[in-house]
Amino acid sequence: MAVESRNDGRQRYFYRKKRVGGKVISEYVGGSEFDFMLAEWKENDRKIARHEKNMREIEPFDLEAFDRKLDALEADLNELITAYLTGAGFYKTSSREWRYKQSD
Image (cartoon, rainbow, N blue to C red; front, side, top):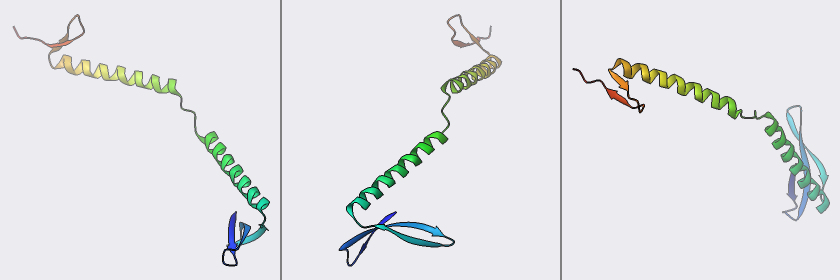
């Protein structure tokens, strides 16, 4: 919907645009202040409906599933680090620190 000015901007009219076939047709709706308020109200309704539709389409983020995936990734990473450091000659102390084995 659009407000168009005619007669060098002295008159304002409210038009609804719609597509018929391959052409856009302008349909006169009104020219009073009430018509302009109605157009604004309808435009706000359309924006609200579009926003609500977008909110319904967005999948809710499953924080617990994400946390489980992070925990599994952390466990795999710790296992990989342990295997690498053990193979490179390191060991864990009682305080859980990695130390290099000194050769005797």
